[in-house]
Length: 369
Ligand SMILES: Cc1ncc(COP(=O)(O)O)c(C=O)c1O
Image (cartoon, rainbow, N blue to C red; front, side, top):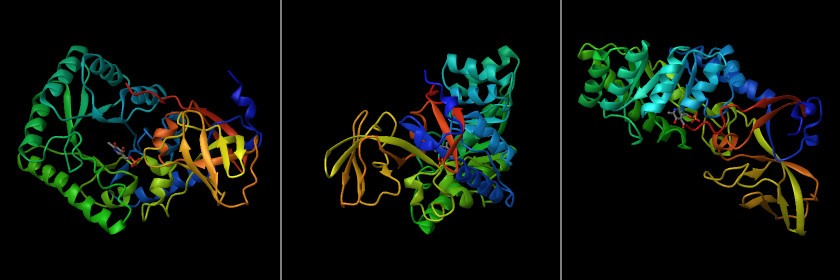
C-alpha cells in the first residue's frame, strides 16, 4: 500500500488519482455556518455521519456545537462510538438477533438511541437489553409522508410508545420523522410548504401522545434542504442534516441551501487518453463516482462535459476548442451525490491553499451492516 502520509505538504496535483479531496477551508465554513444557525434556534444539530463517515470530522462538528451524531447503520455507530463519541442516534431500524446484540454492546459504552416502528422489534430489543442489564433509548419513527419506514401518527404511534414505556430496559425518548420527500425540492417556497405539512404530522403525533400522558422529550428530523425550515419549528429538538458539510451539485440547485453552503468535496482524476480531438478519458469511473443523481461534471472547465461513466473510465466530450488537456493532466470533478461518493473511497486528502494538509481514513465507509 502506498504511503499516503508522504503526500502531506505536497501540491494537490501531485496526488496519485483517483483521489477524494476536501477543501478544508470550505468544509470548516460549512460546519461553522450550520453551527451559527443552531446557536439561534431552540432545536439542536445532530449531524448525520452517513455523509462523511469519518470520526475526526464528527468530532469537529461536535466541537462546533453539535449535541451528538446521527447514524444510519450500526457499523457507523460502532465507528464513532469507538472514536469516543457517546451521544449517537441510529435513525433507522435495528432488526434481527445479531444486530440487536451489537446494539446492546454499544449501549455499554454510550448513550445510544435507536428508532423503532414495530412491536416485535421493540420486544426483541427490550428482552436483549434486560438480559444484559443495559437501557436502550428509543424513538418511535413516524411516517410523515415519505412512505419509507415509520408508523402512522395517531393510534399506531401511541400504541408503540405505550409498549416502549411499559417494556423493561427501554426508555421512550420521543419521536422521529424524516421528511425525505421534501428535502431536495429545488423551489424554496414549495419545499417550505411541503415540509411544514410533513412536520405537522409529527407535531400532531406528539400532542396525541401528551394528551394520553406520555412525555415526548425528543423530536428529531430534518435534512440539509430543510434545516432552517424544520429547525425553526418550536416543537423540534434535533435536526439530522448531513450533506451540508460537503454539498454536491444536486444540493447546489436547492434554493436557499446551494447559495449558503459551498462545495467542499471533489474527485481528482487524471486524463489517461485523448483518442480524438473532442474526446478525453479520465481514470474516474463508477468505482469512484456515483451517478444516481446525474453524471458528475468537471470543475472550472467550460466546454468540457462528462457524458458517461464505466467502471474505471469517465468519458468526457469537448464542446469548444479551448480545452487543452492531454494524457497525464489532472482535473477535479464535482460529485452529484456526496454521500454515496464518499462511501467509495478509503481516505480523504484534506487540502488547504492547494496543499495537502491531512490524510484521513474514512473508517465507516462500507459499514452498511
Ligand atoms: C433519516 C435521515 N435523516 C436525515 C437525512 C439528511 O441527510 P441530508 O442532510 O444529506 O439531506 C437523511 C438522508 O438520507 C436520512 O435518511
